[in-house]
Length: 566
Image (cartoon, rainbow, N blue to C red; front, side):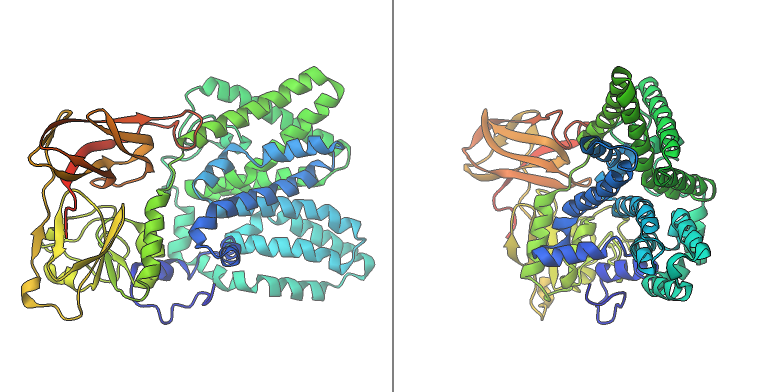
């Protein structure tokens, strides 16, 4: 937001490496409003990201409401059409993934279609094309040069008006204004044609985060499964609901054509046509994005068809509308329950560290935490041992940690660790203490910060062990001496997990997302010497976010003396 695409002045770090990789070609149109929103509310961009997606979905619904109004008179009926179409299952799934480009592009494609009617109503005034031109330029800013496919209908409208030359339309002025709007996007769009980027866009083996290519049926907006990358368990019901929605969309298309409300057919055919083109020439990853962007158009046209049927045959129309709403609701309830929620408490601690120790880096993280080194610790010049890094952090055997992995501090070459005046480490009941030169200066539930003085004593380069965890045999814990102890649980936690010692609740956590080998603290408790029973209970609620999916791989319960390291 302050320096555009310039990296001047940034020290080598995972944050700088991330920007250097993405900024030369990545379209930023969908992210600039997010930066403004964060500045306006005085929050880190991470905390307004989800609300921003909701705002984009609301903008999509507004354009869908306008398009539905071209054939549907009743305002409540228009609202119903916009409400359902804005929640097309595939687009909703991408929103749960954080797919900001897909949601923004869907909103702008619908906006461009809605503005075409307003353009004609203005009797050919040059100013009438500016809103449509701004929407087109914004879409190019979101999707780069590939947005041209989605803008064919808008370009057709502009070409028609130029040919008609109604109202003294001035082509030269329009071309100049359009070029000025597109300059920021076109300045980097040329890099989309580079060999590396273009080949990945067209590579049939490029799946991105997918497991396999998506079914073309998913463009219909109904896909009742928790993760849209997979086939529904009840595929028979999915086929019925998809076929019904397609039939209703055909009916809606015919109704709009009969009433000369050509904007809705233009929106549907343009969106589906663009998706079909990308399905032919793009990779499965690009194809899936195109399906998501186009899916609201199919649902909107289907609901318009159902509403028209309801106007003449109420029972049949109600059945059609009810089944479409059921299919979308069923799909999204499953997706909502299967979502993996971000570990907000962990990220909030990283934000606090980044603010408190601003400028005191460079810092090293040994866990795989991209939101730490790439974002929240950006002012600490942080690097991850298994992340994007400018400096290699070698292990004692000369190798490095693979992406997504971690290693105990004792496994790294001491000189490689000591090169960093600050260590931001995940608290854990297992592993080694940092080298003796480091002192613990900050600690909360999930993270701790260690610092070393500017001059390192030669004798302070060794790595010592922390107090060892106690062994738990089944549910029995043997405590050698009375004192204060801390309880830990390994792995990720879906829903709520509560730990009990001798039948008494000691601590609980909710929705913790961890990588392999990581632990979360459940709290501390005073224990007397002797044997104690230790157990955990997990509670899941079917209709709470993130609690209806597959059970998490929760690891063992571990007990350590508190404090474990000093």
